[in-house]
Length: 460
Image 1 (cartoon, rainbow, N blue to C red):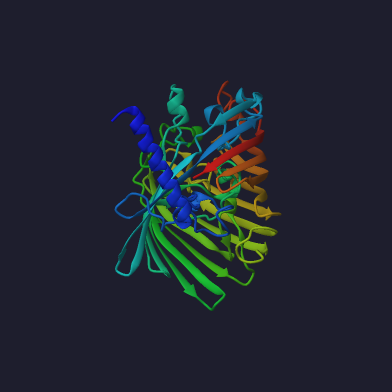
Image 2 (image 1 turned 60 degrees about the horizontal axis):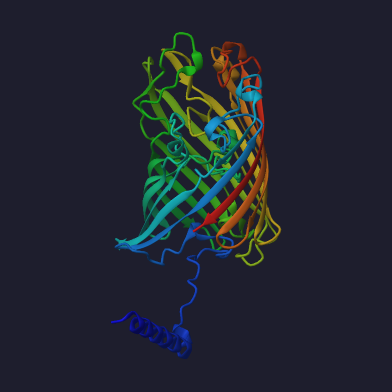
């Protein structure tokens, strides 16, 4: 067939297709609707919570999603290649890092997830999730690509759901502590009283008990692997006689939650405005033990926390975020809980180590003047419970943070956010560590930083 004849055939085919679409408007190509079944609407709860009933290619219904997140941070203290995140603690003001500022871009907080809705099992709906980001702490790498984009497993679990009862197994958020700070970076105030962000392998049972049409109880009980690993090196902060301080023989912690939930106050948005929640108040806790080098006995791990979520101004229709105000708060006490609850695992000297004890608290307000604009402010603090436990150590006496931010959803995919955060660390026994160039070098008893952030998101 000649080129001229081929072109003629293509033209006729395109004309015929156009004629059919014009005659049958209901079959004409249309824009694919947003893959979202999450309230308040797709426009303000974008694809991060996709529609599990919209299948992709898999032997089961599969949803794929995530987001690209570009972070910019200006820090008045230099934190090196991870400066786009809130620090674990702030270098002393007299240290080298404490006297330099920093300006940094990163895309490492971007995420990718896969959700599956599988076949029923003994009357339960089944689903699963696996999620990655790229913030694995590969700071020892000299390769820029490896340093900036190392995959990290966040969540990976399967779930059996009978409605009032659920069984989850895999890796997901720590059962102890329920408070996620609504900061622009995803550290979420974890080391300053908010107890958020840590994930670990676990198996948990969740059960709901309806008291009446408005009130219910939620119970969670599970076994979870401690955040510290069997080979974690914790040198006991320079305690006399200490060599390695390696931990040995971790056993899973027993953890649980008990919450009272009420619909009487209506609903209001929580973290990142992703869901509308009812009034909640309750406790969480854990118990466990850990064998440490040089100790004949095991060191105890324990913690208890009180949490509340209050819709101060509730949603007008249970869907809209406009004109809502939320208060969220938590306080806790813990020992040897290295998920942000305590600054160290244990204190003392080799052969005579004991649990490091900490106390923390935090609170935040989340206000939506309009459907798409969210404003947040919060304060959190973590500190040593008994300073006398650290008589041999140069140690973190406290961490505290203040933050205020604004986020705006331009459409279902694009969000922009800005934030100011102040972060402070207080130290004690500062004369024990004065090594020049050390992050804790210098003789100041405090480190402080001011942080300005800009974040751009594309959610898919």
